[in-house]
Length: 139
Image (cartoon, rainbow, N blue to C red):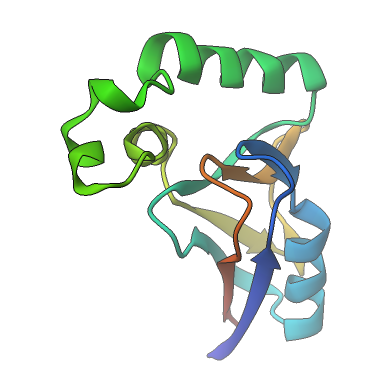
């Protein structure tokens, strides 16, 4: 079985961002030479996410609004975690809700997606250096 590991680094300009990383993932699958297998894409930080969805700006706004309004408003006094001196409890809850990793099948050397699916990095507490692991496994 072939295995390849690659790291993507991020240092976002805003505290919250959604970044399409599909091309980077595709590039690593191609570089690996794997024709049949899987690729794991995982945020290596507890205040970020990796997810699969549609690349559509209105949807991204809806996701951010949903996270802020329903899931975990950015309101530091509201959370016990922030009593430690942190202010990012909402980011932890957002990561827990969206998830920190995805596994995408590889068929015929390509990501085996539905018609609108893309891979995204969701940053919920940015403006500092963070990374994502891309692990390609297969034959």
